[in-house]
Image (tube, rainbow, N blue to C red; front, side, top):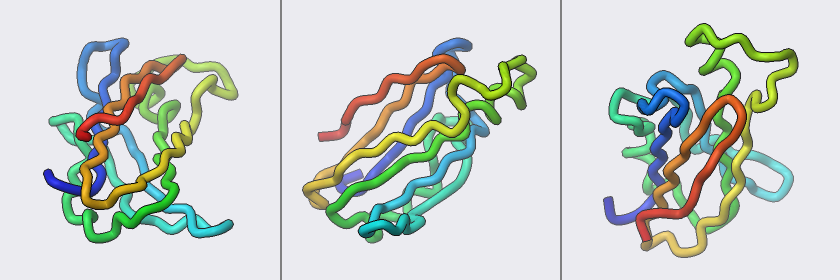
Length: 119
């Protein structure tokens, strides 16, 4: 991948990719949020739906919404109500559209880590 955004999600509690985790990618346009892509993490840990979205990636501010609580509940984990992490919102900026921005998320029901890869 030469440009655009890619997302990879690993459930570090199980040591496996977070296959089936629902998420959406939005671009902020003033007060509006414009949907760029949404889907579920695949068996490779990636959001495959993003592959065709490189042309939609313009410089600006973006949000990834990860459906953390729903993911863990679907796997039978008992979480409190409300869950510590329900829908996790991760906001980041994309300054240079000629570059590739890879966001590798590592998560549990209780925490998350992410950094910019793919520079």
